[in-house]
Amino acid sequence: MSTAPAQLMLLDSASLYFRAFFGVPDTVRSPAGAPINAVRGFLDIITKLVTTYRPTHLVACWDDDWRPQWRVDLIPTYKAHRVARTVEGGSDIEEVPEALVAQVPLIREALGALGLPIVGAPGYEADDIIGTLAARADMPVDVVTGDRDLFQLVDDTRGVRIVYTARGMSNLEDVTGAVISGRYGIAADQYADFATLRGDPSDGLPGVSGVGEKSAATLLRAYGSLDGIIAAAAAEDPGMTPRIRGKIAEARDYLAVAPAVVRVADDAPVAAASGRLPMMDEPARARAADLAQRLGLGASMTRIVDALAAATV
Image 1 (cartoon, rainbow, N blue to C red):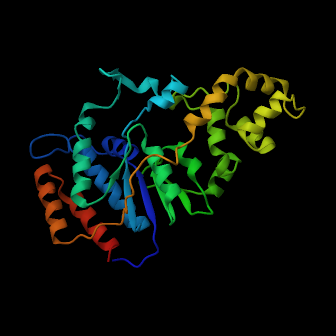
Image 2 (cartoon, one colour):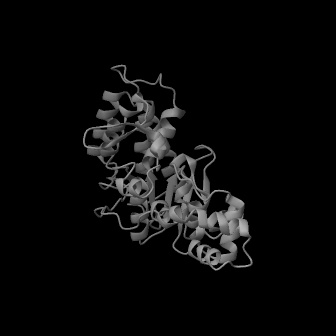
Image 3 (cartoon, rainbow, N blue to C red):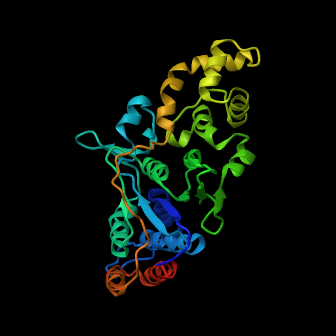
């Protein structure tokens, strides 16, 4: 077993398998003719991450509920534009390409064959699983995602950083407090308030009308937090323009509920998972080889097995 310093890697799984699906041609197929591009791409992503960052622990965090009702109850527009249909019982089905839907169980099967844990919780998104496991961790944490919402978890004092994939797997960016400060002009622990003010159309969060990134950052530098901004607006602080005070007042109802929606949970009901990288012994290699042959995973499975074996030497 590796004697390297302990390092936990948390995967925003859906973010990564969407990237894999669109990054690998759908002509990549199993012996039965079914597309396996997302499966192979996902395995290749993990291989790259394990080889580059050398984690000692790794957990695939899962969306057991991609649009939790408790968030929708607070802001009905939350991710509403991504709903493909609502099934009997009220569950919303996300708009996902059918060829990817069919591969998600295969991704889970591949992770299981490799001995990599999948962690989720009913009523919570992968973001919340990541937030909870990061809060519990007694070691540095790398969160792998293409979702900037998770920038709020950055904590230099605890060694929590984001491995940001938005520019592609060949251009990974390590997001620390210094990066957030340089990019947005705020501290990492202000990011959730910043995101609440700015809003995010991709998540159906309207934000405060007329308050963009620059003005949100300016307000947070002046007043410290969303609560401080709201209090200053209510007190007609002379340092805040009448226009901004009016915008904050108009957004009163939104600002009363949005922080709970935007903030990543750190108390999701997830079971403890070691996450220690599995030893690639002969039984493990045999399981991986059997699945690789059945699905036609070829070199993608070989590479990840070799990467995991090298990381646990």
